[in-house]
Image (cartoon, rainbow, N blue to C red; front, side, top):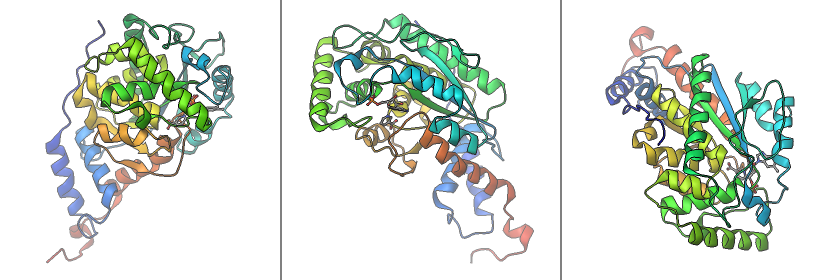
Length: 346
Ligand SMILES: Cc1cc2ncn([C@H]3O[C@H](COP(=O)(O)O)[C@@H](O)[C@H]3O)c2cc1C
Ligand SMILES: O=C(O)c1cccnc1
């Protein structure tokens, strides 16, 4: 069994207080649209009159997938470790976008197949990649819980170092296959509806990917009502890490800015473990990956941006972050009708 997380429902009363305050600011009521909705949710999450989201922390969990050996990705498995070096050298998209929003990017090896030692890398390897879930369970239940704990410990550290908002990202060749398998089980949707081209596979490879997932789900038969059974049978270690990070942030009333398909599937697993988690989540963007809209719908959420991204790493979340910051600035810096001496609605 894993650790128990004490996740409280969000504070609806604080949200009502924020609505009243937003209505007192010098603008027609509701005219800042989704930005106002975000401000209200941030108030509900933090319980604060003036919520803050800076500094924000980014955690990228990296791990390999045994199922990659089935040829379900457009790139070879070695790209995972090569990208980890790239993250540490500052050359990946998430480094650039993280820098733009003043966020530190923490990289966690939670299950990369290759061994590496780098000063800035958090070495938390649980195993050298998952097993090929077409042939056997991806990992044990115990390893699934360990992954969740690594993620929650990591998020706790980032939050204790001052982060007021958490962005989660991932790197793992083959992880759209794992995420589609998880989503199909959690949603009951057919595999064909939740698969996509990932890193850019051909239509023929996509058919094969569908077949691999279909057969894996038949063989492994994960229990739709047991998120840990699903994670251990067809999941990934970086997905478990993201689940744990989300739970730890929610426990500490820290908003989580979720990225694309893979991280939203992790958020869905977290929500199935602890339904209250939902209130703490923002979905940064709508990914091009076909299953993402279904994952978002399962969470009854709306993505902040829709820019045609299909990358992961936390990039779409980092791009959406300035909208969250804008919501907090509006609340903090706008004049009220009273302070500015402007006539209110008749
Ligand atoms: C160079 C490179 C950088 C990436 N950064 C994120 N991903 C994304 O692509 C992978 C998932 O797609 P699939 O399931 O098709 O392998 C994950 O690593 C995801 O983070 C990348 C992929 C590549 C090739
Ligand atoms: O949306 C994502 O997170 C995504 C999509 C394609 C490939 N990698 C990640």
